[in-house]
Image (cartoon, rainbow, N blue to C red; front, side, top):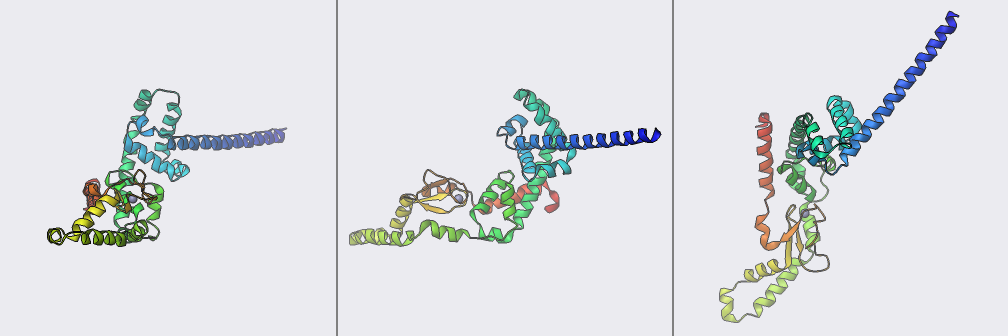
Amino acid sequence: MAELLSERLDAQAESENWHTHHDAAAQRRADLDVLRDLHSFTALADWLDSEPAAEALRGMVGTGPAAFLDAEPDLAGQVIEWGRNRRRIHRSDARRQARPLVPGLQARHTALWAQQARLLLSSYEHLEAAEPRLCRLITSLAAGHLAEGAEIDALHAAPTRTRQQLQRDACGDYLARRDAAVEAAWAALARRARRHTGREHFATAYDDEHLIICDTCQIIYLKVGPNTLRQDRCPHCGGTPIDWTDRDSIVPLTRRLDNIRQRLSEADPETR
Ligand SMILES: [Zn+2]
């Protein structure tokens, strides 16, 4: 009888274990779903009432919700609880409930940003090649934003193309065509007019009329023709092509890099 009882108890314990395990697995799946849902929630920054907190959360969940859950169980737990509640409450209540977890997320943002900035500043080959996607990454970091996971991953591989190569592809035989146009215009001038109108004058006017430039990677494109990007995004970096005559408004990459160094030394005095 005692044996029978003990067997039953064993079976019961086993079944309870199984249930506990099963419940834990279901709970984990549900938790990961909440994190994924937050990752794709477009109004996240607004609902957390903090852009850096939203960026940090997106960054950490984006590289792997399970890794975030395992590495930072306390913070992830708070976030998940908030994520569950926010579906049932108004934005103002969600913001209020987010207050305790926002400082933690903002601290992660600062740490992640510094990590990305240090990696960028030591990626000498990439800085040398200055590919458009690197220009975009520099622009994001200089503005205090986190870069996307894929942009950071790209720093771990060697650069594939240089800006100069892409530039040649974007403009084709533009310089030859410009030279021909300049020669024709100059030849049409009367001898006296040539004395005070140089060829550069025509070259400058031709550029002003025919060129646009990306405000981020500074690849120059043609303003007119079938492949113009005048109303479009730069295909290489997603930047905005602007008129050639407005090119002085573009912040040079070197200044953006200086901004990053400055911000990094303020965030992390050890690197000074
Ligand atoms: Zn561009």
